[in-house]
Structures are given as C-alpha cells and as structure tokens.
Image (cartoon, rainbow over all chains, first blue to last red):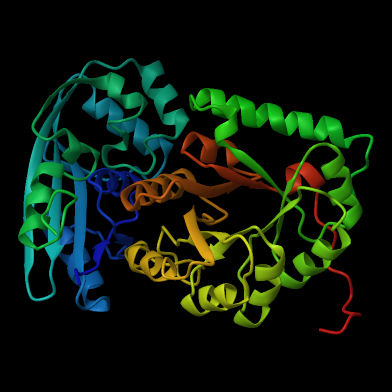
Length: 194
Length: 230
C-alpha cells in the first residue's frame, strides 16, 4: 500500500502543477510564521520555510509523504513577499520594471524519518512598465496573493521579457526537481511500474 | 414560490447562461446536465418545472425525496437525484426512489443502498473534499481510489463520477480543477460540481452535472415548524 502524498500548501497554482503530473494527493496547508530571521539570506529563508512546513504537516500525518514549498522574489537583495495592499503591490512592480530579479523556490519533501530539500533560483527580466499599466494590473487584483505582486501565468505574462531557469519554479513549484525529489521518496508516478 | 407564468422566462435565462458557458468552454451543450434542485420547494414547483421540460430533480433530504417520489409518481420520466448526505437508516428511501446518488463517501451507506436496491443499478458520485478543509464532507483525495474499488464489488451500485462542494467563500475554480484532475487520473467520466453561484466556472472546468436551485426556484421557503412525526 503506497503512502499518502500530502501537499502542505494552500496555493492553487502549486496544486494544479502537482495535479498535472497525474498524482493523487491531499491538501493540508501549514500555517506557520513566515517572518524572515534577521540577517538570513533569501536562499536560506525559502529552504527553511519549506522544511518547516513539510515537517509541521508530517508530524500531524505519520506515514505520509509531505511536499512543501516556499517562493520568494528578491530584487536588490530585498525579499518581496506578498504585497500587504495595493500601494505595496504598485511599489513592487515599479521596482521590478525594466530590470531582472530573482525568484527563489525552496522545496522540501518529508518521508517521516527523512527531510530532503533544495532551492531553485530563476532569473526573470521584466520589460519597462508604464505607470498606467502597473495601476491597471494592481487593480485587477491578480498579484495580491503572490510573491513580488505578480503572477507569471496571468496577465503579468506580458511583463516578462526573459526567464533563465525553471519557469514552473516562478509559478511556485519547480516541477523537474520536485519529480526527482518525490521519486527518491518512493512516490509512484503514472509511469512507475506497479 | 415560482409561478407557471414566469417560469419559462426564468428557465430560458438559465439555459442561455449554461449554453454560453458551454460555448466558452468549447463543449457541446449536451455534455452538461442541468439538475433542478427542488429541495424544500413544494411539489407544485416541481410540476411547473416538469411542464417546462425538466426531468432531473435533486433532493437533499431522504424523507422529502421519498414523499415527493410518491406524490409525483404520475410524472413519467422524472429522475430523482439524492444530493445530500444519507444516514444508513434512511438509505432504503434512496435505494427505492432515486436514480442517482451524489454524496457517497461511507462504505456502510454503500452497503445499505446495495442491500435495498432492486432493478437498475443506482448511479453514484463519490463525494471528495478536495481542499482538505476541516469538518467538510467528502473523502480525502488519497482515499478515493481504494473506496471506489470497494464499492465496485457491489453490483447494485455503479460509480459514475466524483462530486464536490467548494467552500462558500473564495475562488471555487481550484476545487473544480482538482476534482477534474482526480477524476481523470482515476478514469471516471462524470463531475457533479457547480451550483447557482458558480456553475459557469464549473462548466468551464469540466462539470457534467450542475446542481441549480435558487436560480430556478428562487429563495427556499423557511423550514415549516415541526408538526409531523419524525
């Protein structure tokens, strides 16, 4: 009998990315304090959060394989989380306009005894955005629940001049690396021998 | 309560919305079934709807379904859908009167339905709690495959698809998509999802049965004071 797979995330985008792989999984979001520790680098931050979320949900679900992730946007060494309000959303896009930023996703898989994790970094370059365009985008509300205040798959796809690295990582879950982590954890895929 | 004079227009409006959603989703109109949710509506409302061509009616409460089945026995071709949770002791009413059951999640209920079912098998949707919300009905996605295998051992029941009811607030689309993905992985064809407030999104995400009450019959009457014996 194969173990239950649990996605420890409320993000609908992560859920869809995982569902696309043909995997069956339960959803159990981890509600943890996401405040960065002073002096913590963004890479350490996202990996720590992903590990903590996976471990937290794993404790409540012994025997399950738990997958967690955390995505953050970094520009000028500053972590841009989810905007607190529209004004912050506008400020974030103004900062990102016409330049490159990094999107970091930490992924962690808990099998109970073991906790594996990794960090994927993707470079995203925006074209120059007009003030009216930024105001319009913020008004759509699409960026409200996303790190950096924009959603790669939605209307903000028109902002992206170039991506170097994993595109799915920018959406919230680097699929290639996640598949490898899950296979190592023994999760059966549609193509795995039964 | 609805009246016979205005119902055709109400139905036509709903039909137009369903047709538009099907067009948008590039799906034939025939791929989506409209289930008229008649729970707590008087029999007269069902008769008016039937007179306007509707045949599939959804009831939440086992005893109400039983009573309406008797009162509407003269309406040829009417198909009752049991859409609410059923206690084992009331399964006999569903087994006797319903064509379809949308809220299957307990093996003892499946067993009780099978024991009392005669004639054609009862079509069943397995209810799934896709979002993992606490205190919500439905099986966890990881439990569905094994459950379906157990129900398939009962020839009086036929598992045709999955059902879900997203939480009332928030975007229902991720729930619809998750249900569609799960059904696809398990090889199940039908999706019972979408109600008055979100059936267009549900159709776009693959719903094959939409359960519409308020948009057809208006607000439900308040439950009558308890005057009948249980």
